[in-house]
Image (cartoon, rainbow, N blue to C red; front, side, top):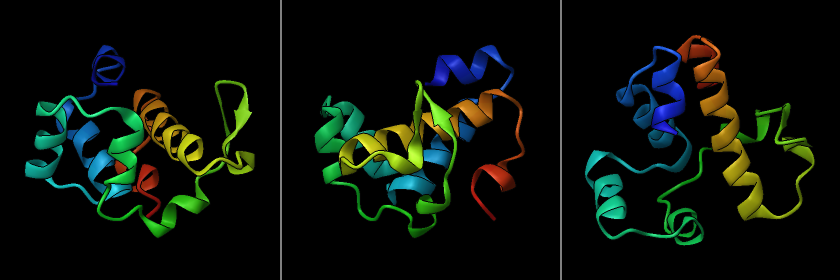
Length: 99
């Protein structure tokens, strides 16, 4: 994720901000998950609070419409993919974070 954003001139702190917004993790708890090498399923299951605004994330990522994905875990993964993709495409953070 970070590499994708950095290739387009974005920075790790922006990626972190997106993760914090989506999952409710903070810098400390995110670092714990990384240090523990937590798998993706556990990462999302242990997320403090998936942002309620995440449901307004729309669009296509990896050939699927995010809003039509029925499996909660897969939808949350694709939400994150979509937000990072928007970051890499140069979208402003306010728009990415649905403010």
